[in-house]
Image 1 (cartoon, rainbow, N blue to C red):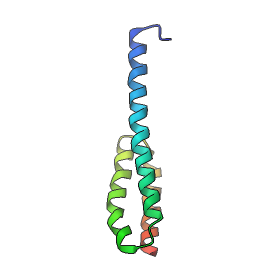
Image 2 (image 1 turned 180 degrees about the vertical axis):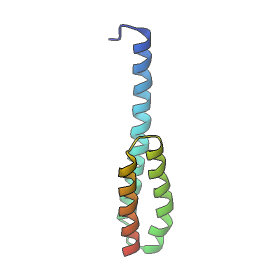
Image 3 (image 1 turned 120 degrees about the vertical axis):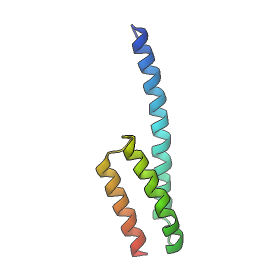
Image 4 (image 1 turned 90 degrees about the vertical axis):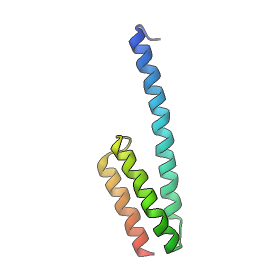
Length: 83
């Protein structure tokens, strides 16, 4: 139980942010999974910019680290190029 009003507010804010970040991170993970399960090159090339944009947005708001974002983008790009 929070002893101060500011601590109570900080708890509410962090819980709201945690749920927000969790939603967008999970959505992006599902998009990456869908892209990696695609065997059609044209469909994968159509998905690649959207998924890359989602990854960049997560890195921009510090949900994931910038290096992790770069590694994910590199991995999906090489996967699409190999198709």
